[in-house]
View 1 (spheres, rainbow, N blue to C red):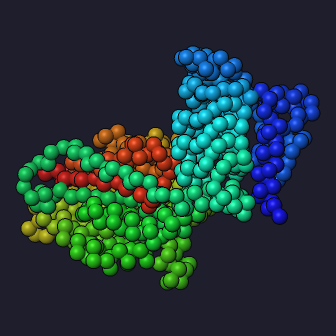
View 2 (cartoon, helix red, strand yellow):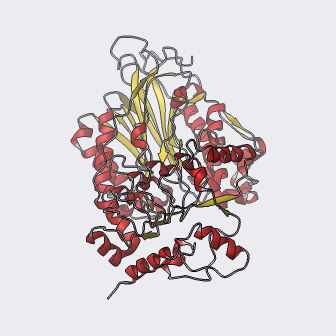
View 3 (cartoon, rainbow, N blue to C red):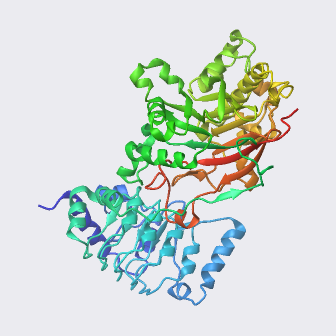
Length: 598
């Protein structure tokens, strides 16, 4: 008995074989747009409608706002592809794009001009029923494609770059001579329809398609393919020669890591990652090996739970380096029993006791600060006038941790902050308010720390006359890019109360008079113009993680560079076999300036 999944394969093949006439899809779309009856053959339906067995009478995805373009074979096979380049140039001039689908089917095309791949706005491409014997790897440049039909050609293999086409929903390779599927296709986590009938593929692939359908085949390729070659080590970037040739510890040189390690409870959305590479046992070992290899004096980890902190601190690799730490979970942990609390992620600061001595440590719970401090409103009675504080900020349970440390050899003191704020871009007002609350609380803490007595023989006497003179490091996942208002607040020290990112909501003093802070802060990676990314997924790749420092207290002497560009050209996102989180780690080396803001 033929399975339902294989019946779909047969159905797709039948429709494809009826669609071999020149520009079949374009003509069908034109007929439907004029109110005519859809011709027989493969209807340009959504993948879900094909999975449900839909045929005639279904609306084509080419009708509506996007029309289908037909180009002649002569233009595509021209020596220089001038026609394609001209169309692309005209598109860039007027910034208008009226079509996003291209039908080159049934033209007897033997080779694709590479200029075709300049059409990076395409979301549908039909090159079916031609004479193609190979598919260029450059097709991956068409990253917006949701439908790709290469059926009825003479293809014997598919390029590995197909796996980079992260938006594909339908991929038809019916009636070719393809003998195997590249394992990189396992990254096509959005693929809903894969048409494979009419190819000499292994029985194992056909049987899996019959049993589990497209998702089963993609999952098999993803989970059981060979592990890719690892990237080259990240470069170490030297920014400035150290001020002395003496022992680095004596001269106040130290290193800091910031790293969102991706908590286990948040891994369900990474459908492009092999299942084994998402397992916490695998990722935990990878994280551990990575951070130990840095041998940093301070490590700030986000999305780490207490159970992991306790486990790390019990390991010989940590104890031999004399690490200790301070962890605080997100505020939701207050409602849970002890076992559940240990599994709630939060922020942890690790430091080497051989290098730093703890003076004090405190958590910052933004929820609590919003409701109980005077940063937003003068008193609790005034809160009732600002429901947005209740409804938007107080519903979030993000936190930060703060350690006030003293450098053992030099006597320099510093505040180390580890923070994680709201991720959702819809809540950009909440991000800004949380950043403001963080900086406001740090001012209160710094003023308190400045009053703490120093040892009678401390060389720092007279240096910390006010809170703003306390050296500060802020490690953070701010979920905010370098062009954001949060970045502006940290770097410039002020955001006006009428800024558009408040989105019209009212947050007391913040929206009445703006947010400001007295700390002269700079992102350590701003010294090289920031990295190209710190968070990498198929739908978002940008910088959101930072190590901020007091410019009057520290010099940045070195930075860990970004991942190997050649390696990155072959992945669609993290985590994967070599990167255990969707974030990369940051590593900065600092040196205390000889005069500490005095």
